[in-house]
Image 1 (cartoon, rainbow, N blue to C red):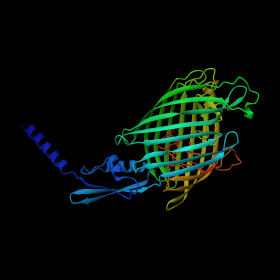
Image 2 (cartoon, rainbow, N blue to C red):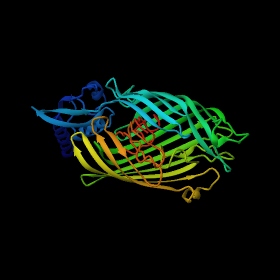
Image 3 (cartoon, rainbow, N blue to C red):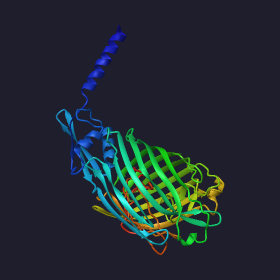
Amino acid sequence: MKIMFFLLALMFGVSTVFSQESKISELTITRNKKTKASFLYRIAKVKQGSVLDSLKIQTDIERIKRLDGIAHATYTVEKVGEDYKVNYDLKENFSIIPGLRIGEANNGDFSFRASLFEFNGLGRNIIFGGFYKREVFDSFGIFLEHPYLFTNKLGLGINYQDDSTQQPIYFPEQQVNYIYTRKGPELTLFYELNFNNRFELGTKIFNESYQVIEGDPENEGLTNLIEPVLDQAFVRGSYEYVDIDINYQNLSGFRNFTDVSYFIGSEGFLQTEYIINNTSQYYKRIGTQGNLASQLQLQISNPVENSFFAPLTVDNQLNTRGGGNTIDRGTKLIALNTEYRHTVLEKGWFVIQSNAFVDISGIQQPDKEFSDIFSEEALRIYPGLGVRFIHKRIFNAVIRFDPFYPKNLLFLLPQKAIPFLMLNSSFNKVFTLLFEINNTLAWSSIMFTFLPKQKTKFYLNRFK
């Protein structure tokens, strides 16, 4: 009887405590000129009438800061009678980003890429835009992504790309220059499990071809060359873990991205059956002015037999800053990129940082063993110094000047879909100009260049 009385008293006491918990009587959002309040209320964990929870509030703030249209966000909590009023205060990015890249193509000709993207369409974080590129050959792409189309966790993206580039294939006796073309639509589902975990499932149907470039000096006198053409498809699944604190140009935390692609229809000389990519990124604040950023990228594809059309490449736009354009091909690749950034001036929206970097990469060539990744022929090391000019309000844009040793120029593609300025190629062009978004090390993202990698997020490999 005493036990029963004790349990009843305990239950009554617990219910009394919970009934006295502080509630949120009002949730407001201020300074959201473009971003719709209804969209922010939809993705927020904190709701009007819910129990006051500081952890949920902090989670909302970090999630909002990751949106492409938001530069920064803070919150205040005000007591109103027995309840509380919570306010989210925003600083928005300028989110319509034009771009123009001017440079030198692989054959030495003039090249350019013009683009226009909206990163906060309809005030709901919708990404829409496209590009036109002339880099020896004509290319274009159109993109539409709504990460929260169906629910506050589930979204959809669609794009179409017709991309043609000059690519070298390294046969044992000589290098042959090809027109490499891949064109087709891609459909992707996005699912955000929670604040730290995100999934993607996509499929692409495409035509892939390698055609020998007639009249190219490198190809003179060569006969009976292979020109593979295939209609293919792939199914792609990815998982991303993110625990990064963003404070304008300063980052701290960890991110891991795993992407697995399975190809259907591979045959002949185009033998790619799968590609597995794992990218880990680590950021650490050093004092009040320093920021260390490191990325480790591991890529594996199936072995290819009696073919030099390997799917993985060493390229300064993908993994090895300063390496040059498509300087090697293989089936397994390791790349380590490390950079230290130090803020030397910060005044209002304007920041200047100095930076030092070193990139190391190795690749297993089609006719070599895995241990050859670390051989003198396959291992590459490129160090360098640079300076970064940062505008906090234009999508956290960064202009970089990155001279390096020994020969090419660095560029870095960041976490969110990113514009950048780049002057690329040989050592006599002594700097790289680029914009990057949220300063992360995600290679292969949107490239908006105004002169001759990422992605971000997030959005890896979708806008390249």
